[in-house]
Length: 109
Length: 466
Image 1 (cartoon, rainbow over the protein chains, first blue to last red):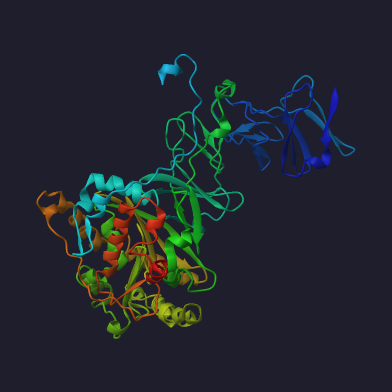
Image 2 (image 1 turned 135 degrees about the vertical axis):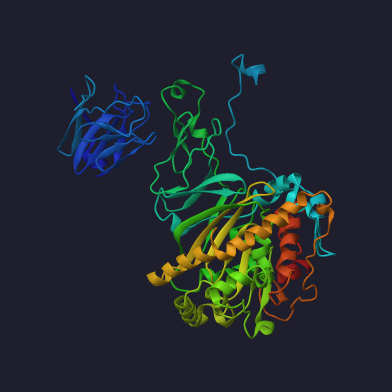
């Protein structure tokens, strides 16, 4: 099931925003070079918010232990021990709105 | 702890920063005898005196942290000391500068191990992975343990901020005392003299070439009092070094008697001649001498005749308690205390941003040749200060008086300059006022008394008495 998350304009280039859609765990929505990315707002390592981190050179940087996740692949760099890759939800930027498929959980790209 | 803690009823921790209160140490204050112009040698070796210095002086004074040019961008940081307290100084995302104790509030470990860096994302403790933002706030911990503990209040925890941070013309200072007066009040009218180095040209100043660190086995006050007003030693201590670089001895200039003076405000002091280039000449590069002659001419509009003649002159300065510099030679330094008998010395070279690159390069080389651990003048000084300190381990030796009485009748009441002015730079006057300030810090537990004592600028004392 695909659900509406927010207005597309709510996600400026280079920023990450946190949303709490009803019935789902909090998610993060980021925009890099125009493209949208939706992923759990929870780092795979220590459950910290990724929306409190930032984007840098096409990667999500976790603000707590500075693990970096590639936006295209989810591959982790500079990980604390045991930190897996990041997974993403399918999403669409359509008619000025952000939509994502949250059921079934994120998929490893 | 276990009375309630083991039963599971412990109160929640109070993690608010603690800024220690000052006390009163009149017995230590009396170690400086103003009537006899003597300083008791116990101030250089006594552990009790030293601990009182950390509390009364280093936990209250504005202390030098960094030059703005060392941390230009958000996340840029340097690690330094305030007294013996390890401190991180970091540029914030809003471009302000903040400073924090380099100690994790969990088990106290250092959270920053390196001397300096750029674009830091934060600081992670090596022990349990507690992670702090460049704003000092606790961002998170390792793993999924604390997050499941309902009583854990992350927002209450952070690195202890240095209570106040401010800057003056490129130099950043901090104090652990939330009640300390502003940096400008701490300097008082002494800024008049600081501007000789910090504001003699358009565009401001910068540090170049990194920092040189060394250790000297001496009490921190010997180098501080040396720079506050002891050009006297140069004619003996540095004569051979001067001979080697200049081909002759140190020369105070033809109009020494008429022009040279010492000035002191709140224990900060400068002694200077007005010979324009006497200090600069010792760096050994004629091009630098030409540069300073030109600079001196150009600076006349900004600084007036007297201060423009002091830019490169034979002179030295200490900001109380432990930050010193030499106009002309452009070496800036902090004498960090490491116990009563040891200092860690950190040295930088300051230049005008607008100076030509080859001039900056000559300053860098010249300072390293003269005032670095291998420099001809630094070597001379270190040995003297080590033995001036070490001999006082002798029980009988440390009972003996020390003489600080040169120039007792030399007060210059006619000269219209800020602060306490004494005639001639060959004089113990500034050193006496430095130790008087030291005694004021030992004596007083409040800033009202501290800012209105004998070392306060004379006109302020006069108006307070009215």
